Image (tube, rainbow, N blue to C red):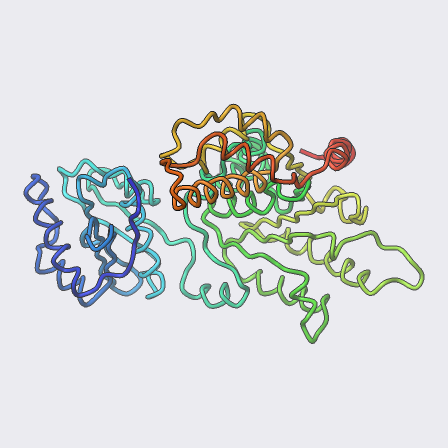
Length: 423
């Protein structure tokens, strides 16, 4: 199933909320709040609904009191359980109450209610004996304005699980980065200092930016991407804009900061007289130690050309790890292909696609998959029939897709792993 979406509740949705409340009661689960209270909160406080077409198939209603908000009602039609609607409703409600200034989202559910997976998947923790669940919102209201100024955001939950394949890279990043940052007390017990800054390097399109975002999603930290090209337009100059950006980032409680294509501002310093970028490189080298002094933050510098980085930039003490992100292997390509093949195309020979796409990046595979789907759609509209893309559609798309990474680049990357990798 699919095709559902989450949106703010409208007056015409109240009938659907009533229906969901009554069905919950008929199923033997007496709602904690009376129908009148639910409808009052849906009208005067905060409510979101899940819809399929014009039909309301789920609803979440909240009520805010000072810095705490409560889930007054949460229900999903029986036929739509297991489709991700329950956690989606709670995430939508969380977003609205956070904007209203709440820092804690709590829920009381009937003792006889057994379906609590939606709350657990949305990050709530159960309080024993009371059936009381609460969730501390990752970003408080005071930070929202600053995060918006920085062009940052809170990424949706589930971003880590959405990274298809790349099991070796995921396992390494999970152990080296996520675990110590998510469990700082446990890390301290074992004498492990959580990482503060890492470099990710590899050919274009291999997923370095995706991994940085996935880490932020996994930790539920703010995500800020610093774009050197945009900072260069600042009247105070690139070095000044970089310094100001990092000073403002210091006011965030938790943050993953990504500098993509870092070689733009940290390339080899050479020449007499020095180039204008040398001042920017020097500024960045001074900012990193100060960044490392603050807990609950991670700097990720990503580059396609690690050989071009200044040697002082990569030395021990500045970066905890220098992690290679390479081309997906067979297992990873299989997982990535399955992510983009629609359910209607269940007869596709995935193993043939995996073999034909050797040397493709995740971005190459996504492009080829979308190209095959488009070709199948156009063929169906033109009267060619079919219920979805076939193996032939995908193989044709692969043949027509030029791999981002050349054999020469792949060989250079293998050499770079030996020369620069530090995991």
